[in-house]
Every structure is written in C-alpha cells, then in structure tokens.
Image (tube, rainbow, N blue to C red; front, side, top):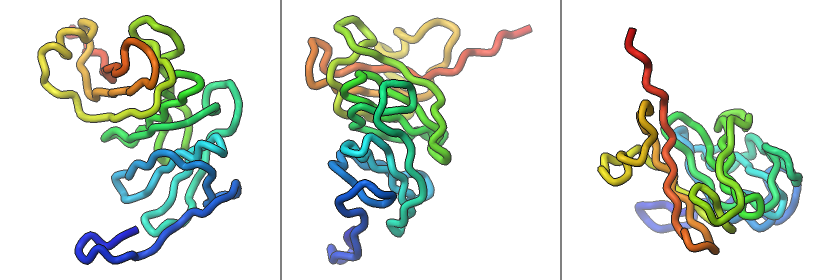
Length: 173
C-alpha cells in the first residue's frame, strides 16, 4: 500500500502460499464499502477478503466444478448492495456471492457463442445502471434495472457483454 499524499510505501500484505492470507497468482482486486479488500486468488481457486490493514478475514471457494467452486477465478467487483461478482474464465460464468459471508446467491452466463454466453472471460465491472436508451430498451418488460455488469471475453465474436441486474416491478393492485 502506498500513501496517496506522499507516494511513500506504507505496507504490503499477502505473500506466496496457500494458507489463509497467502496468495497464489492473484489476479484482481476490489474494494468493499468498508475498505475491505477482496482478491481473486486464482492459483488457490478462491477469493480472499482482507481488512483495510491487510489482515485475512475470510476466504471462500475451492477447486471444483460445482456452483460456489472455481476453476479459474479472474475478475471481481462489488455492487452497492455488497454483492460480490466473480467471473470464472474456465467455467465461463459469473457467480454472485454475499460479500460479507461468501454465500453463493446465483450465477449467470455459460460457455458458448450465443448472446449471454461467455468465452474465456477475464474481467468484469459492476456499476449503477446508466440511463442509456439503447441499453434500457433491451431490458425485459416488467423489470427495473439496478446495475450494469460488463464482462470482457478474451475469445469470441462478442468480446464485451452487457448484463442487467434488475428488480421485478411490483404489480399494482
């Protein structure tokens, strides 16, 4: 970590290994609203959460082919509700976890060339839904979009995919 005012070195954390707090081929980092640091620990097939001071707080995921497990976790980001989105390059999907406890909430995507499929995805970004007409007109009727999830593929004709995280509109009585 570096001091943003002076540019001086403050401290580092992590190190190479597979026990809690150590990393193997870490690839992406995201900051939580409380200053916590989430890291994709790609070589250990997991995500680790650190305190703002660099103390290990939590890890979740392991090598496997079931939901909540990883084969090649890469990009990650959080939304304003504390949900953590993790893209897995080998599974070609995005898994969404509860950021505070690592519980799997849902997933989307999958391998293939069709719309909504991914092919060797590497990174993602989650941002509040922008009021852009060409995006909004593509949202299914009856849903109000909250977040835009942008996933970047390393392979495929659709190198950038856009997904909406939306809430179903309440029916009026």
